[in-house]
Length: 305
Image (cartoon, rainbow, N blue to C red; front, side):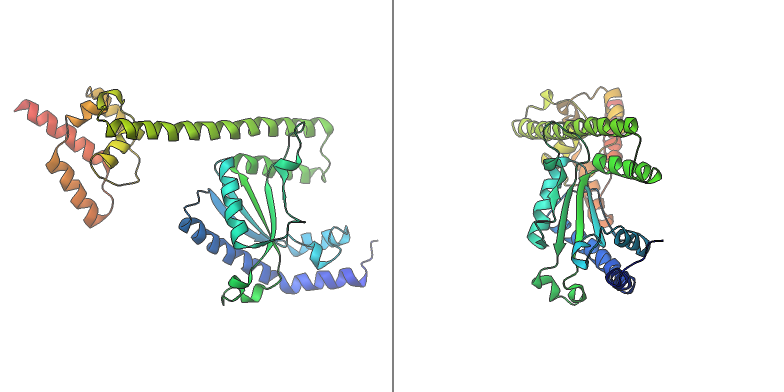
């Protein structure tokens, strides 16, 4: 039977007594980062935190993965999930400005894979709180406590979670064929991440082109879709609402022979638009969809008269 030495017993005792402190630090950092990302306009999917369980900590001590408190850098873990791989770099940059990073224990696993390998990609930063944060009452109790921040995309996260779950069931030793297939899947997801990145860039370029053509009044050259119509309403009519237009409404416009922005400009009704703008100011954002249906209805009534 395995017998713990005095140092290991002390480590386990320390964590049992202090685990709640690590948990609270994670929760406070979660809220703090959400506020920072909102202020810095950082796009992300989710932020979550967790404190390592006492059982998991004890097992790592027994396996000598933790030989000292200094080596236990992931007792508090924070995970930031992004949509795109480029966003992981933006998040990393912001985190480096906020926290003190332990460069020796931090790594970008995508850089360490090498050009001839595929596999788990993620940014791991081991950090502590700077003096500026420790002066704040809500953080002062967390002095010298290390935490680990993982930053990865939704696809990287999905792969890592499934791989971790299946590895756990095989005690960390997947059969070689299954392990190989996991690696191949990681390669496919890496390609998918890059394609999402390319699609995102093309959408941005399309939006830029639409804005330029609206400014040049080339409305007949811009087909009706949720992006182009949203841009038109925002830029031409000054309705600044970050609200998408449903495909049902786009379909309705097409059914009424409104195929481009020139066609749409011909059903504009200043009084109706003004009404929805006033409604937005009093009751919150007005609905594009309702406004467009009202414009179509008014146009039909005018034609009948």
